[in-house]
Image (cartoon, rainbow, N blue to C red; front, top):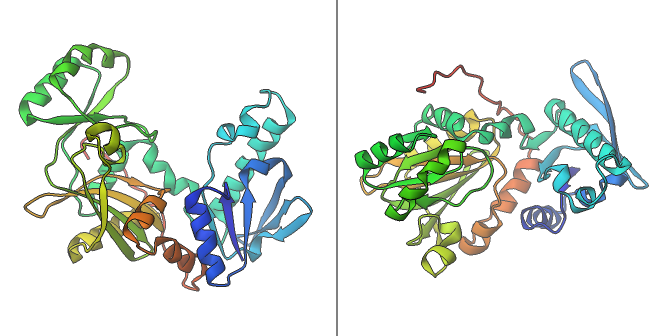
Amino acid sequence: MILLCGIPSEPPLAMVASALQQSRVHYFVLNQRAVEQAHIEFTLRGGHAYGWLEYGNASYRLEDFQGVYLRLMDELSVPEVAQSPPDSELRIHARRFHESIAAWLEVTDSKVVNRPSAMASNNSKPFQAQLIRRYGLCVPETLITNDPELVLEFRRKHGRIIYKSISGARSIVQTLEDKDVGRLEKIRWCATQFQQYIEGVDIRVHTVGRQVFATRIVSGAVDYRYAQSQVGESAELEAWELPPEIARSCVAVAEGLGLPFAGLDLKITPSGRAFCFEVNPCPGFSYYEASAGQPIAMAVAEYLTSRETESIAPVAVALSPGG
């Protein structure tokens, strides 16, 4: 049996559920919006986790879950929890449940897409960039600072630069224009990430185990996700075949980060160099599958149900500030 965790109507979760149904695989959806009905308890014996997941009137042995697909949001973002008082029983239960299931996900023998510890690298884009560089992909020259003068110097060096957040929180990538220079004093209160602008073609790569699905994006926007607001027309997406050496590097990055399923944002320059901006450890792939017709959901379902032993493990390295 496969365990799906998240909001049932959310497209990625719904598409994986549909793929499992097409394959006639038994699965159970743990609806995060009904967290008050969920209880989990487990113990470790001989290096293996044993226990029970209770949901409403149903009970499931944890060791019966062959795979787990995870799309959980922060529990305080769940509407039912967010609307309850801070000291309510629902909030206390939600926090304890999410802490317990996160702990189980780290020690279970089930295949997990993806384990919480592996997803943590995305919480710091500068840290993740140093890891990416170790596996064969280029990273744009980056400046993280709260000093406006350093930003102007960086801009003089590269001509065109972009800026975005440092954390894993989504931000809209923007080019630093002349009109923005007067606002640079604001970064003194919040260090910001600036990068050289890379000319080339935007490619979104999804890796599922060792399978690679690449999507080419055609757009005049700096951030194609917001193409409609930035340039007045939506981006065009199409399936694309990566050069073999770049595909191998993408798999190496995902495996090195301990991610059975990953979304890599690349730009391929006219000379063929591959720059990676970040690796999404919980990719919202539905937009790409719907637009380019690639069977990503089915690949996730097949990975979860395959009998191959999971060999992907998070990398543990000591990094110097310069990478």
